Length: 220
Image (tube, rainbow, N blue to C red; front, side):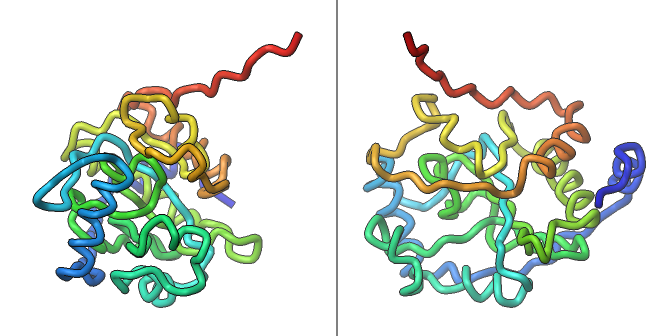
């Protein structure tokens, strides 16, 4: 499925372009984002900005870039997301989306808050990868694009952690974790352990901090 690591690293050394494809970030989205920061994290801000400290990789499950973009574009959540709508009407989104051919799209400035990971949105840059189903597994081109984008972001910001979405609950109790509701959790699998393993091998030289381990109590 994926290229050998040395070929991936070689291909990632070439110059890439980030294509600007902004989702709607109007007054409504700004106010919903400010409310989210205040209600979920206790952060009172005049502008909905973040100080990026981590990168979170995702998959969309949605099969095409157009459909995935459409899902994120509205400021408010669609009716088919009732499980998180009660928490906030702010729509989910991310900062970047990587198409199946490896094209990288920027959906919003990296320093705007996007709703993509519970507890950590105030400090996390989100990267969505189109696909992620059994019929549409993530591609070699997406792997190479993610590796390049991670290096680009690490050089631009003081990024401490690189995680897969499925690892977000490892940060409960960490200084970065600000979610106030102990019952607000969703189970995630994206972008897959194999994909994350390959990304981490290729970005090891960036010296990200290890993901915190979850303490499991001993049973007597």
